[in-house]
Length: 244
Image (cartoon, rainbow, N blue to C red):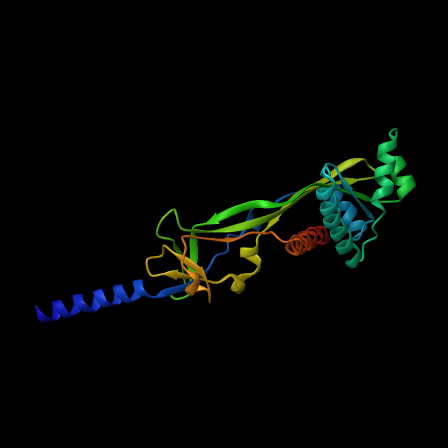
């Protein structure tokens, strides 16, 4: 009987000690697993024949407000810059826009006047969506574990690039891409956090003294962040094209 009491005391002590302390963890929602990629055989054939085709960027639905249009244009500049850095020939998109605005232009005319192989239509580029991660990797137990309640989670921002590729000399759709990423996937150890022993409250690692909260957020807010994630998604697009 005495040994049973001792065992119970030891167990209770361990439980209370765990509840009083912190776990260290992080989340990786793996939003890239939901990327949508469609590549036609014709585009694959083009990329095999011309590994780095000449491209021109087109923006189908630019923002209407001047301020937002300026910001969006800076992101498109980043896309063009990454393609240039990777050795692609990037044609002037303003020339394409002027041709399209004038009307009565077909893809043969675009090919003749701009000398480009692919038009990359940027259908959407946004940073305002998010995902709620309700499990975390516990570095103490080395296991993926759930938070205690539905009220506890880490909200991770999502950057999304949607684009359509058109093979110019055919006037044919070559590919559709929806590419996603998240700070929680890319920043890894930078976004470590503490979890209380009850797995109900959280704080970024090193900031526990400022308070523990049921929700932590890792949004994509600053212009610098948005440019960096635009560069990352463009590199992912180029990697997909290069792998064909």
